[in-house]
Each structure stands twice: as structure tokens, then as C-alpha cells.
Amino acid sequence: MRDTLRSLVTGTVMIAAGLLSAQNAYLTNYYLPRFIRTNTDNTIAVRVRNLSSTPLTTFRVDWRWNNDVVNEGPWQSTTGITGNQYWPYTHPVPFNRPTAGAGVLKIWVVGMGETNPANDTLTFPVTAIASWVEKTVLLDAWTATWCPNCPPANSTTNLLDAQEGVIVAKHHAVDEYSTGTSSTYFGQYNVTYTPAGVMDQGEYGLYAPNPSYDLWEAQLTERQQGVSPAGVLIDATVNPWTRELSITVSAGFEYAFNGEFTLNAYLLEDDVPGNQQNAPANYVHQQVVREVFGGVQGQGGVVPASPIAGTLYSTNWSRVLPVEWNIANLRVVGFISHRQNGTAYTLNAAEGALLPVGIAEAATTSPLRFMPNPTEGVFQMQVPDLVGKAYLLVHASDGRLVASRSLVLSGGVIDVADLTGLAPGTYRVTVRTTEGERSGTVVLTAR
Image 1 (tube, helix red, strand yellow):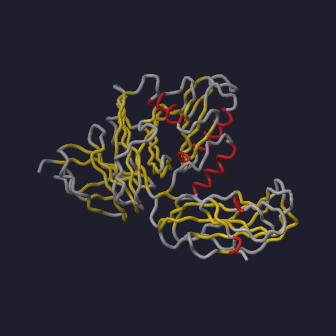
Image 2 (cartoon, rainbow, N blue to C red):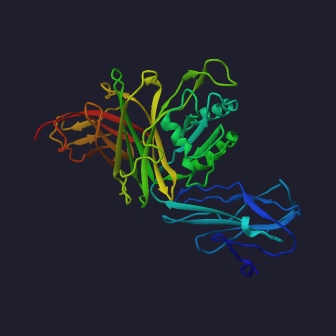
Image 3 (cartoon, helix red, strand yellow):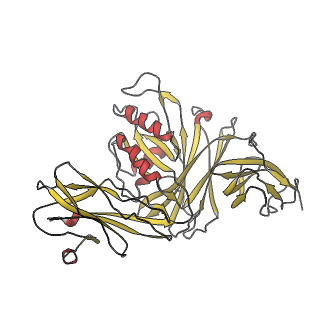
């Protein structure tokens, strides 16, 4: 019976079960991140709703991965759903992918008396990955000092930015904090109102700019359940006397796939006192976007179309900072995007403070030890208190990133790649993991 009622709507299989009376069932309140872990249960919990004035009393929810077997849920009977009512439904079979790979998850409602199958199905393109890094969600906000509704939205985003795994960047619309690069960047979303928010660059065009700032926290929480195939590293130095800023953004893949990738960076300033409509005097602005270094598209050509897992891809930007920007309150946000068909998705983002040139060798709880030191370029390194996936970063005395690679720490002595290609001199070597970083100084001598 069900197979005879199957209809194809915009390339997606929709299912109706029976045409007993006019119904219009649909599903809401489910989100699946773009990248998920393999061998992990993802509970399918939705809300069943009904656009028809005729009560929906009997229904079930099914799901399917690609062209695999349909997982039929049990029938549910209610006293009737209509109007703004909903019925929570948790499918007894969780979605779990044992192997890595991309595909489409479809979830649909089967209602007794359904007459409009066009809105029955939720569709989620998703990739399961066995090796990943933690995901940081990027929330771009559109605000203005003349906006009467922006203070509560700003309060919300200030709290969200303080959360682990969330970065907020506030672009200002035609006010004293606007910049050409920032206004042009957010202009791609064609938003004519403030406040507004866009998550992960609109998620390939599937996330529309959203003025409902009271919903942003829940949406961010949903996205934080996912993981990322790529990690981002930030290295930013500034000369406090000349105000010369140098930024290096690096990205490395744990799970590599083919596509078009770009790198980009924001310069944000916090604790900026100023005016704000419907707010007290000396209002303090946070996460103000001062510069977008890679433009609207981001910088292409750095990450190849077929990246290699474990390889770092880096790009650099520099500029002289205006005197009115407080160096102590500046930070850099870097992100890697996957682009397709004119749309984008933020694979991952990271942030870092500016490191003044000349004090790059900040104290750590356990500095790195090198053997031998000085060295001609081949040496061992002792990292006693960090384990797992890590990145090795080598900086010259002027703050430039001159070498980098990924490695795995086991809590002891490890060999370091040959650095004999570097000129003799003093270098800062940093090992960075999600748990922290350790740095030390190594002296390279002539061979």
C-alpha cells in the first residue's frame, strides 16, 4: 500500500499512507550536523505537526540513509493534532554510521489521511568521519549603534561568545564602527534589517539570516554536537611601536575530501566604549569586526582541491593598525570554508590573541626541551605532559611562521622533522594541542 502511494517531489522521496481525510502532517525541531562521528548513536527526536484543521490522530515516523532499508517507526495514536499543537516522537532506532562516508538522511512522517506529501520529509546531507577535530561554530551578527532592538541581541551574543566552541563576530551597519571590508562581507547575505545572525556562513545557503536572537543559543547547541574534518591554527604578532600586524592562518585536515576551500580571517576588537541607542551612556561594544582580510570569498589557492590529511596549509596577511584601535583588546579569528555552487560552509574556526614581537617566548608550565641544542637542524624534543594529536609550529625571531607540521605525542621524547632547510638563527618552537601548548627556543647552527 505504502509503495503505491510513493510520489517524487523535487528529487526527494515522500511517502503518504492512506487518503482517508484531508491532512497535512509535517515535522519540525530536528537538526543533524553536517559532520558526525562514526559508530555514534544520533537520536531522531522530532515534533509531528499538522497544518490542516482536521485533527491528525494516527501517524508514524520513518527514516532512511541513502537507498538503504527504511526504518519504520511504531504507529502513534493521539486525541488529535491541529493548529499550533505538536506531538513529540522519538524513533526507536537511532541513526548510526559504522563507516566513514557522505550521504543523505531522510526523515518523514506517515499520517493516516495525508493529502500533501510535499512537506513530509526532512533531508540532511551528512558525512560520517572516523577522525575529527572539535567543531567551533561561527556566528556572524549584523548590528548598529542606531538600532533600537540591538542591545538585547548584543547581550545574547556576548554570552554566546564566552561559550566554548562558539565565536561571534559583529559586523556594524553604517555607523562609526563600520568598515568597508566588514560591510561588504555581510552584504553578501542581503540583509536589510538589524539585528540579524548567520551561522557558519549560511550552511551552503540552507540557513537564512535570522533576526530571532532568542533562538540562536539553541541553534548553536545543535551545531556543537557535530565535529569537523579540519582544524584551524592562528598565529598573530604585532609590533606595539610600529603597530605592524602579521597574521598566519593554517588549516589541517583529519578527514580529507575534495572540493573548493578558502581561508579567511577577522580582526575583532572588544571593550570598545561608545554610543548605542536604547542603552546607557558609555555603552561597551564587543566583538567589533575591524577587518576582513580575505574578503567575501576568502583566499583561495592555499588549500588544494584534494587536500592531504595531516598537512598544514597556511596563508599570511599583514597591515599597519590605526592608532584608535586598542592593541590590548584585539584578537584574530581564522576560519576555513568549503565552497560549492556559490555558497559556503564554515568547516571550522579558531581565535587567538595578538602576541607582541619580542616577547614571543612566553613562560609555560613545562617548557619544551630539545636535544641537542644548539643543533644543525635534526634534533629530538621532550614533551612530557601533552599527548595525542598536535601541531608543531616554528617561528623566526621576527614572529614569522617558517615551518609547521602535524604530529602525535605520546608523553615522552619524539623525533622532530629535519629543519636544516632553515637559516642559522634562534627559533621559537611551539607544540599545540586542544589541551594547551608548550614552547621553547632552539638555536640552529650552520652545517
